[in-house]
Length: 322
Image (cartoon, rainbow, N blue to C red; front, side):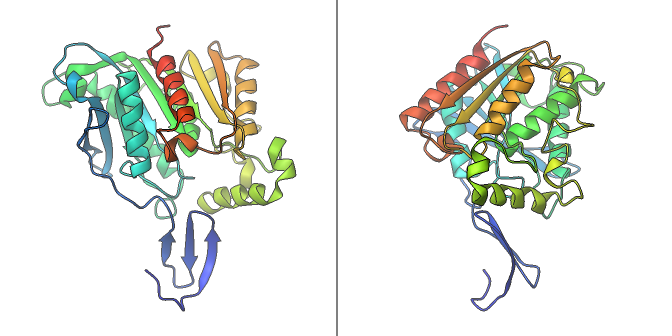
């Protein structure tokens, strides 16, 4: 921790501050929950390194009672949020919410511990998540020596990309990249669960017009993790600008967009849904809005009734056969 007289050079509220000596202090997303059996949900988890070259790890989740059952289960490759600069797979908020999702949906979750900014500037997070998706594909060969939970339990014909906030942004870009990439040969991407997606632009829309304080706050998040002359119209954060990949290239056949009424990102999620249904993409999009709640409320309180409703909606989406 920094001494009380240390001078601050930059505040990125509510996530972190940077001191003039270069020291970085994260204000959120630093707590750690161990993997293992969760007695409340009956979900068991474990941490494994999936990309030895970079040290990227993942936390795997499955219902404990299912470990030795021959039934094949859908796979969710999960990308956590945190504005690309905080949090991890061991964050207690994510750990608890994913335990709840796995218990409800009876699925295998692979939560990716991608590297975050500023220590690892963008596009590192995207590259790590792409490597994680390729790793899942490599597991589909089913040979000895592979991850046993996936070899014995995973249905590689039912793979989903799910994420919240920055993680939902990542899921979108992974699905675009998968469409035309020969690195993925064995798995089938069924859909995206896009929870409170973090898309943005220089020009405000919806709630942002009447809330310039929060608009400026989100501007600052992006400009901190991805400084460029394009600002918040960089195609990574604004998927509708000239030069952005066409939605027709999304490598899945269904997308569920989840938004929250009080979320400053709400109208970005709604716009994403509208762009999907009016694009040349041949899939089916759905949108579900939770009234009276703010950004990723279900992460902070997974046991509230509205969070349970959201989790049930997401679980139904994942388990619905095409």
